[in-house]
Image 1 (cartoon, chains in turn orange, blue):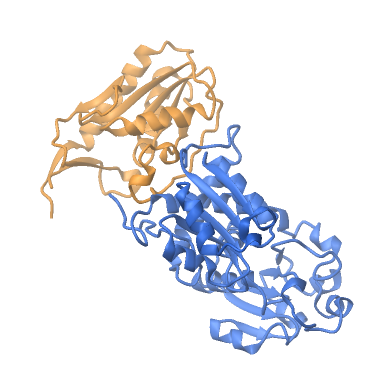
Image 2 (cartoon, chains in turn purple, yellow):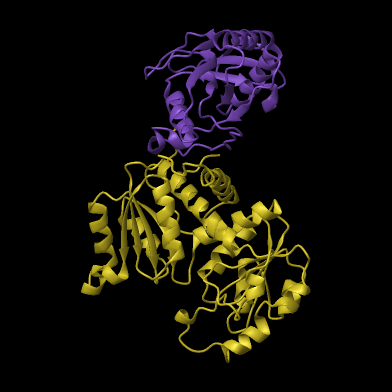
Amino acid sequence: MPESTVILDATAIQRALTRIAHEIAERNEVGDDVVLVGIPIGGDHLAARLAKILAGIWNHAVPVGILDVNMHRDDLDQRAAPTIHPTVIPFDVTGKTVVLVDDVLFSGRTTRAAMDALNDFGRPKKIQLAVLIDRGHRELPIRADFVGKNAPTALDEKISLRLVEAGAAQDEALLLKP
Amino acid sequence: MKWTRKHLLDIESLTADEITILLDTARAFKAVGQRAIKKVPALRGKTVVNLFVEPSTRTRISFELAEQRLSADIINFSTEASSFKKGETLKDTALNLQALNADFIVIRHSASGAPHFLSRVLDAHVINAGDGAHEHPTQALLDTFTVRERKGKIAGLNVTILGDILYSRVARSNIWALTKLGAKVTLCGPSTLVPKTFEQMGCRVTHDVEEAIRDADIINLLRIQHERQRKTMFPSIAEYAQLFGLNKARLAGTKPDALVMHPGPINRGVEIDSEIADCNRSLILEQVTNGLAVRMAVLFLLNGGKGPQGVAGT
């Protein structure tokens, strides 16, 4: 059984999302065409929560999509084939400001794959990146525009985000030591 | 659970979970076909050889398009233009193709077991696109996918396969896939083409077509395979059409939501009447669309496996 530490509890997660939403609202003027696109697993639920908070700030609905990036990964022949989740982007991304939402930012390879995948759906005006947790160890020149928490980690540690939308009893982010 | 196999040689050796992974992955690839840009880079830099030692149009085209949509490089190799005519063995041909750094070999062959043989002598991933009267795994997967998509499930459904079972690799692969996923399979056709021995595969055999289709949720029609029959197994095509062909009157005796499938090519007026092939209960063209998604899923999943029979990565 690996040792685990709670790095964000339910209150901290909600507070971080509220802050990210306000930062998104600050960075993008009202009326800008902002859409949220979450990366499963995890990012899709976070995107839905952010959209709800943003709708409260802006007083209009914020479109949310789900983007599976597995077909665009660069390590497909180096691991067992990943489980592909449905991609649902019920709007045109061309000309929009797309905020990609992911749970944990690590090597940056998922983000790269996401940007490639997104381009198959159109040409966004801007792409911004929001993550709940940045754990470091980037392998690509990618950084997040909005970060809920910076969590220094060792390479062999793992971060597990549990959300009630995915069936967890309560929201929490755990740091798992090997 | 993750996919760990290196080859797709048959349905018989797959588990229900593995079939389900394939079908779930195919669903994601079907969505790719509905995008403006229908191509993804998953197999970029990989080379796929389509080794069709037996004629095929739709399966080969479907594989080719699936490979292109995954950004693979493709070599097409068919009997007409090959060195088989010059006496080269299958093994030598395959080794030569592998020497060109082929990563995947998709093989259609008239000899049962040809893909299994290649999987033992090659490092490349081998995909069975139909071997003799043995198996046609991607056809069974696309049929199963189509059924699941339209009926929402497989378990508990009554599926009747009607026609030339004896010579049909499609029937064998379908029987394995459907029974593994919990469907009840009934086989029907002339007794010469549907021997009772098929009951050993876990299905019911009957020679009474009205009874066979009465409670069916799915009626899967198979073509009479003239090319595999060395002697006539039934008196005439006209008699087959009269006794076993699916026509309006026979369809009226089925459940109102029973759906009709056919792997193609269809012989209008023989195993299926024209008006039924074109009616809204026919899934024939949906099967073709789904075949593309299923073949993309197969290539995508096999690409992930590593080592002999695949060792899962992290």
